[in-house]
Every structure is written in structure tokens, then in C-alpha cells.
Length: 230
Image (cartoon, rainbow, N blue to C red):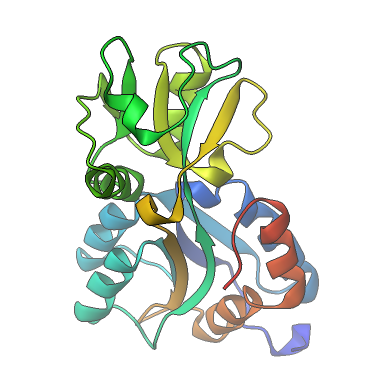
């Protein structure tokens, strides 16, 4: 669509912290195609953002990780239309580079002498980590519960834990940590979806932005950052 047809003003996009690296790149490409519609991202935890929206926080588009938050938003009547899935993420075990504890599986996270940290269960990564451990039949008493996947990676990278569970994209490019794959049978793949919000101040531009997320150029960009493409 041409720049002339884009709604003027900044599009307020609520998005999860796991898109903090990807979204600025997408925003830059979108602005090039729609110079009258700059994007103003608001990063946070998807469940908390749903609560904020219910309380009247403004926004034009909502990007969520996990179907649960988007379903809650839809059931609360916050969406102007059906959400669009534009990417997926996988869980990985994150260990310090060198992996001194020789961790190879989820079962190792519950062993004595292994300091494991997890995301808080109020966050998508914490909720999915709990479900993955349950599928694997592993009990873990975390040394701490972090505010999200990036925090888990950071704590492991700084030597404050022997292992954690994070989204794969948050490990990418970090030389201080190593990712260990979790088998499909124990995985809890997380879907990333986007939707225009009811009452959006810049509804047309928000629709264009949501559609832009599924274009080949953006999908390729997301793939390069480690996301899985639907």
C-alpha cells in the first residue's frame, strides 16, 4: 500500500519483550514503506498487557506470545478482528558457555548440585517451562523466578545459575551462553500473534502493520533472528 494511504500518527504497538530485538528492525522497514506511520513499541509481558488493556490503556495493535494472552484479549472484546499468527518460538535449555555441569536434558535440571532458574509462571516462558518439565516428568526447585526469558538468559550468562529455560531467540548471538535443544515430545512451542485493537486511534495503519508482519521480507528477517515461521 502506498505511503499516502497510511494513517498519520504513531502506531502504538504493545509487544512482548522477546520481540525487543526483532521489532525495531520490522518497524524500520515498515516506516520506509509507510513514512507517515511511525511505530511506537511498548514492550512488556503479554498477560500483564492484557490486564492493562482491560483497564483502558491505549494501543493500536497487540502482539502477544502464547495463544493464552491473545485468547483472553479476544474474549474480553479488546480486538477489532481475528489475530494473525506470524511466528513461533521454541524453548531451549540455556547454560553458561562451556557447560561445566555437563547438562544435556531437562532431567539434568532437577539433579542435586545444579542451580536452575526459571521464568515466573505469570510469564509465558515460565508457564511453558513448567509445562515442558511436567511433560518430561522432571521436578525442579528453581533458585529464582525471573521476569521473563531475557532475564533468565542474563542470569545464566553472568554466572548466577548453572541452567535455565528460555526462548531460543533470546540466546541467539550471546557468546556467554549455550543453548541445548529440547525434544519435540517435551516442547511447548509458543505462537506469536498480532491483532488490531478495538478503539485504535490509527486503525488503518495498525491493520497495515499487522499485515506487514506476514510479508516475505519480514518473515525472512524473523527467520534470521531464530524465529520459526508458520
